Length: 212
Image (cartoon, rainbow, N blue to C red; front, side, top):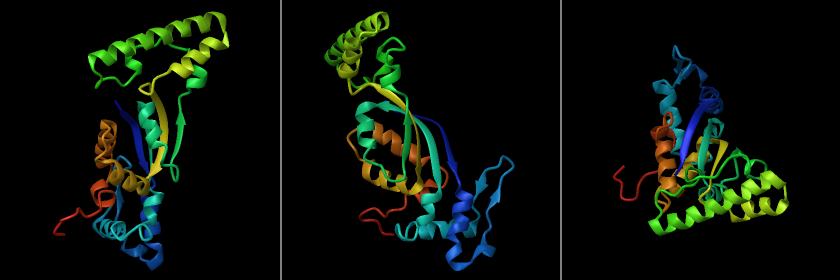
C-alpha cells in the first residue's frame, strides 16, 4: 500500500528562466500565469525545456530546480528502498521512536493487502502482541515493553513522511523502478506520470526498439 497526498510542484518559472541564461534568450520566453496562479509553459519555453531534458543530465540542470513536495504513506519495506535516493531528496517522517505507543495497533496500520490468509493470521498475532506491549508500556513506562514494540514491529508497518525531491530525481526513480516487483513502485511511477509536464520533462528516455 502506498498513498501520495498533498503534493505541490514548485519553481518551474524560475527554472525555465534559468535555462535561458546560457544563450541570453529571455526575450523568447512565452510562458504565462493562469488566473489561479498556475505557471503554464508557452510553446517556445516548452520546446526548449523538452530539448534540454532529452539532451542528458549536463544540459537539463534546470530540472534540478523544479521541486516537488509530497506526503507519502508507505510500509517500512518500501521506505528501505526509497532511502537509496539520497542526493537531492529530503524527508521528515512521523516518529516510531516517540509516538509508537500513542495509538492502538490495528491491521490498518500495516500494508497487508497482498498477504495470504495464513500470513494475515500471523500478522494478527503480532498485532495482538504489539498492542499488549503498548498497553503495558503506557501503564508502567518500563523500557522493556517499548523495546518489544520497536524490535517486533514488522516491515509492513506504514509510515508517513513529507518528502521533497526534484524532477531530475524523478527521472532516475521512474526509469529505475517502473518495472520493479513491488506494486508500491508501480503506483509511485504512475503518480510521477500525472505531474505537470511529466511526459515532456520526465518520461523522456527512448524505449529500446523505438523508431524515434
